[in-house]
Length: 106
Image (cartoon, rainbow, N blue to C red; front, side):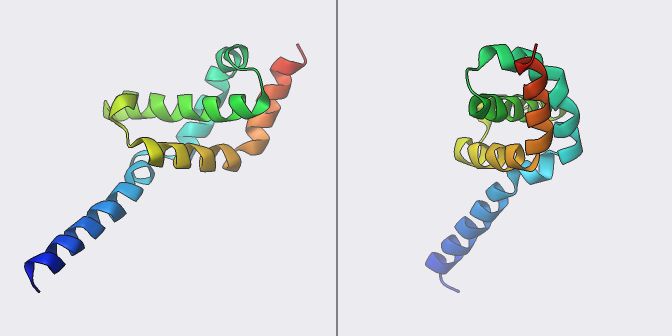
């Protein structure tokens, strides 16, 4: 294997490792447990359900990253964070919708 192939292999491995960045650190149950904790604050900081859904999940993920791993949001891979949070918010759609409705109907 020549140097160029070695570099390509190493870069490919780094990209694959980065895509697993959040999966290695975040347990889905931990996110689900944190959703109700921040729901009221996030509700009053957002204007639409779509914003609420994303921001609530983002808040839970970033709290876990800080509390459990001491990684501040500024140090997270941003594009991967967006994709991960979007996927999680879709996964917890029913829970998030229920929380939103609680505050919407107050």
